[in-house]
Image (cartoon, rainbow, N blue to C red; front, side, top):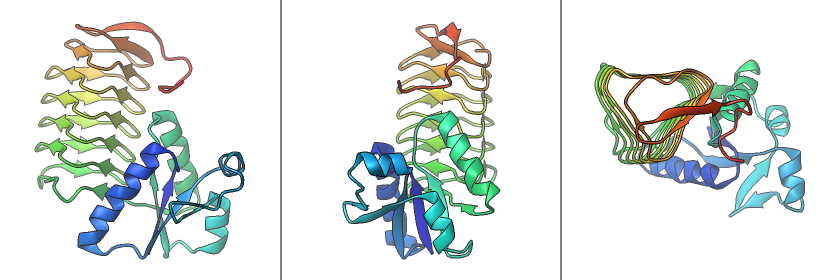
Length: 224
């Protein structure tokens, strides 16, 4: 089995390192491939490898490999882009891998979706639900009975207390904390180090202590 990492930028490289750490123990993959757009490859002077890892396009992968010999993982940090990439993969009936660092314990009562990435030293409590294609970065804490929506990104050292609900396609910035039983809507961005003590509606950008909605998330982009 080959694992294809969609995104050859910085986060894609972190996903590659996570896959290598998993593979050292589980021996799941024979090789790794970065999957990028033609535009990216052209911008890098038609570069066909990065650090000896093949870089190619999704179209070339599906023309070369059948559905039983490759699986995909999304290695980008924009929730909207994560959603679109995962949709393209699953529409072609290819498999999304799930990557969980070996030092992370997942309780039996917790449910992990397809295509989820959980990085080193994350704490995932009991009765948690993590939706498809979500990304949990290092040292994040997800409290009991919390729900994380599809395609959402939980940044390093975020603390989410118990019984919270985080919507789909939502981004929570580094060192933010979320009070117990708080709901954050879909397509919402929570700024770095924000303190969320009350519900935040969908499609908003919120930040501060306490976090307040500042404006609509019309562009659906975190990194500009």
